[in-house]
Image (cartoon, rainbow over all chains, first blue to last red; front, side):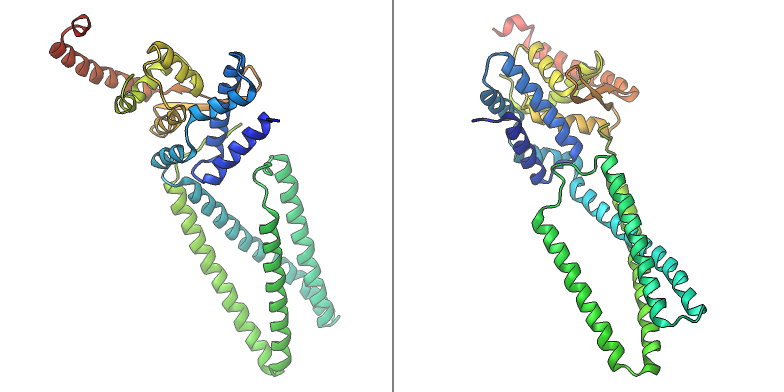
Length: 229
Length: 112
């Protein structure tokens, strides 16, 4: 049994997979496809035949993609890199802001003489609360602006990989720090942590500056894209 | 049937000429051209969009998304001020070609 909406959905998915088309272009081509289907159905064709003829008249995806690349250069991958960089730089900025806030809150127990453990716990809790608040705000903002398009979902495979990387990375970091704190003499441990912290901060700033430069460079090369409103 | 090369060369002036008559969208532009040419100019439909996007990048046309009568969103295009000026330049060029060929080949009736 032929399902027209499924056929259009698959056709759209193939275009997305081709990687040459922006979401706006895909919307526009889908609108054209639907116009064609409606016309052929009106002329008496079955929905299956109408879809087949309308899709064929639009042309092969590969040939279409080649034409769009000529016009747009490679905006699709540029936009992807741009958003990845914006996300990364935004992540660094947020990390610094939250780290600063949690450090301030974390010093309070120390000032009150409550000991290192309570200071550490309060710092971690502050960070967790801040991140939860930001992620929840992003989630609700994204839901309102319809960012979670049905075809834009991250696949389960990638999500699993992402969680695995976080889990393994986090576990290795934790194990490394515990070993480091156990084997390094107390007098040297503080200095070691200070240099690690300064070095890490310097690297993050360096990457953030490089990221912002790349964002500006990519934005200059991108053609303007009006929004589907 | 008109050759692919000639179709490619005429797409830009034809799109501008159709839009000079008023705001329109891709599917309707293709239908108008097909109708006016008696089916001789049969574009590969998807190929119109890179041309429209190029014209939009060159700021000769302006695109905007709007809801159609059916409730679906469509991208409508209209000529910009520079698009209107570009049509004058296209007209001059095409009339030059047309007049040159006509003077070489004679009026249309002599061709048959």
